[in-house]
Image 1 (cartoon, rainbow, N blue to C red):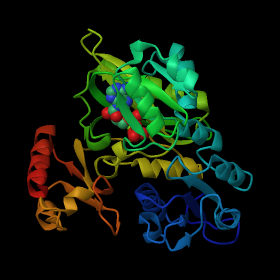
Image 2 (tube, protein in one colour; image 1 turned 180 degrees about the horizontal axis):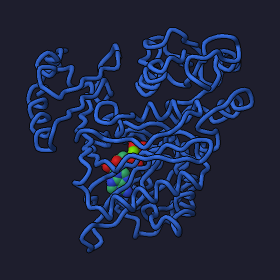
Image 3 (cartoon, helix red, strand yellow; image 1 turned 90 degrees about the vertical axis):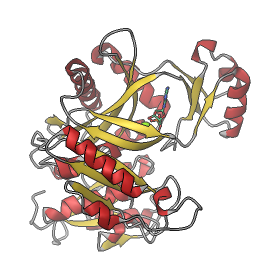
Length: 394
Ligand code: ADP
Ligand code: MG
């Protein structure tokens, strides 16, 4: 689907996205820059993606009429989050090219299936998931080996930003936590002591061509990504190579088309570099890749557009070290809990500060309202700018 051409309906070639969040917004912006028209299917009236896109189909993700309209208007369709019903993608794929596939999204939607895929790839990738047990019944709960405690109980579905997770230390706590989570299918993972967290973004085309970004380091607070550090060269070379090789293998084994993010833990195994553990994957661009918008010649959203439209993929080049700070809703409140507006003018006065706000109307603690990427000539300078920005934001 070449940009600037006419699509199947005689309209400008149109790319569609299921979901109206910030990832959809940045996909739309990247597609529009290439001259594509876009359509967003999203039930909310004021969503970040719909604000950036004149064609908004406001229905539920599973609504047959909404989906039919999306297929009618679009020449190819993607998704911006993994919790759209896989059946919706499956149906759309019978009408139009869809990437990623319903099968890949279904796998990433379900921690049980995802971990099974990671385990199946482990002999080849050399990296496996944390020790875990599947809990679907009362009997599973009682069969849990004590070696998995202390652990983290995670719902198999619909968790994000640390939601749907509870830390448990004893069998009694585990039992209580499973009750509290509604006795839905879960995985219990052993609580690991993390040296650090990494993620790798790969993009894979329909023809199997693959490109990737070097691993970035992520810092989470309360289960939510707070900061991403993208300073290649700062990471042990062997660790970075292993993480990239495992990510590419996992994408290839899935026959994946689109942008895929794989999250890793680094744990202490007595070696100098530490050992890699697979955490989870996202079948889409990822919060930890937002720095690519400002620090790379091709962003993760550009690659999402290219994989969807069947355009050539090029290996991204990072032209500046970068730090990305998530801007969460608490910044919109003072210490007394009164609403306030962060001093964006002072932030924008910092050289190398790139502000992205998503247009969300209501700030809530923990809600991702935007992000700030800092770039500069050296990692030291980028860190200094980040400290200055953090001081302004308070
Ligand atoms: P989400 O879907 O909410 O991102 P994750 O499984 O990635 O869920 O967990 C969120 C964060 O919680 C991780 O980035 C990590 O900081 C922490 N975490 C998750 N699993 C473990 C574990 N087994 N051991 C230690 N920390 C963990
Ligand atoms: Mg995660």
